[in-house]
Length: 162
Image (cartoon, rainbow, N blue to C red):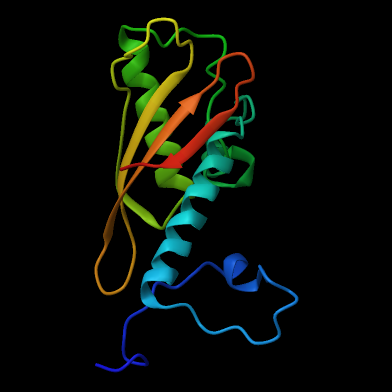
């Protein structure tokens, strides 16, 4: 199989339009491995943006249910007023994050979010693990993201998991 026949991960339109090195007039197409790495990084960046956006307070009639699927419903609920230290909240937070990713990140499927037990009791941040399948050619690629929510700033950081 020559390089032209080798399946490549298709980057998002935004990622294909961004010129990371404008001084370089000749850019070679990425290798399949580089394309997959760029795809993974683009998804990580977009999931981080999603998790750093708070959805609008709900209050519209049920007849306007499609609004949840639109840009108006983009983001996750604001968890800063709740404690996710234990109880049923842990499960609720995970399900809400899963729902947001399923709704707004179509490149991921079989999304599963877990809250691992804290190793450091003094660490006030909430840590999430996101496991999913990334749509890639020729076969879906398993991906994991380690995520932390800082309660004071409400900032979510997403890094590629191991």
